[in-house]
Length: 106
Image (cartoon, rainbow, N blue to C red; front, top):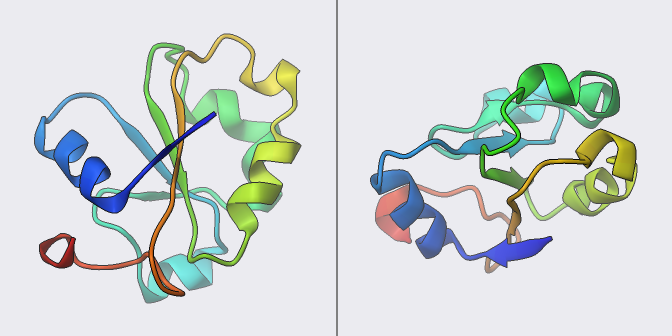
């Protein structure tokens, strides 16, 4: 597992290459605000449905939340059997309490 800054994430998105930006917060929190291009995949569903969400093992995966610590829980819950075979894992680290921001602010 590695880390990616918001500005590095912006650069990756602007490359227009395959990337799964996974927001692990609740659907309600996601509906309130989320990173551009993120998909909602709450912790409650993560373990059971992760392989269905991202079937290609080569897809770079970036996990994000609102600095609430849910990403840390997600990393622990994604057991080796669930993440076995995925090549690229990253976690967004932000500054301040909420890394959910407009990319123009990065």
